Amino acid sequence: MKRSLHLAMLLAVSFAPMARAATEADYKAAYAAAEAASREAASMRNQWTTTVSTLATARKAGDGGDFDRAMAAAKEADALAKASIVQATSEKEAWKAIEIR
Image 1 (cartoon, rainbow, N blue to C red):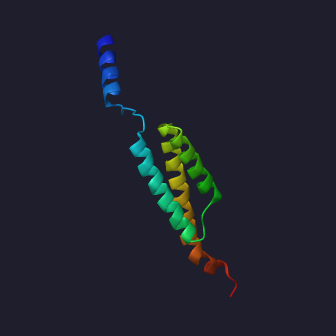
Image 2: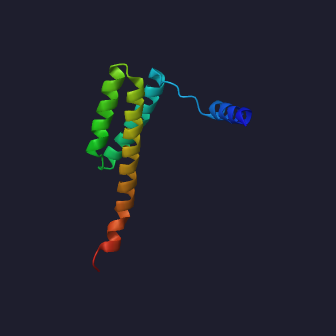
Image 3: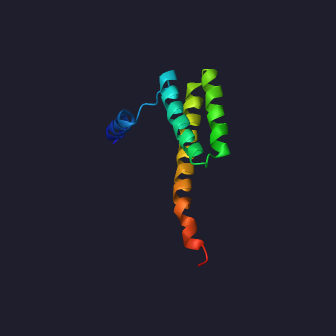
């Protein structure tokens, strides 16, 4: 029984994804993607203020060398920017459904 438990624990640990620290290159790639999505949202005139502040947080953390925090903030900013793009796209036509005819 003990042997099978140890074997099961060993297998579980060996298949668990290894956590690795974000590098500066990882952060820069994530930040560039978030910034591009944010620019696209701005061009649609639907840039959220939370996206801008989250990008600023990512930049501040990256400048301070905290790439894990910077990476997390950049990914969050990217998600926010993409959500604002989806909102702008869906609302571009949605108003027609509620307009009184």
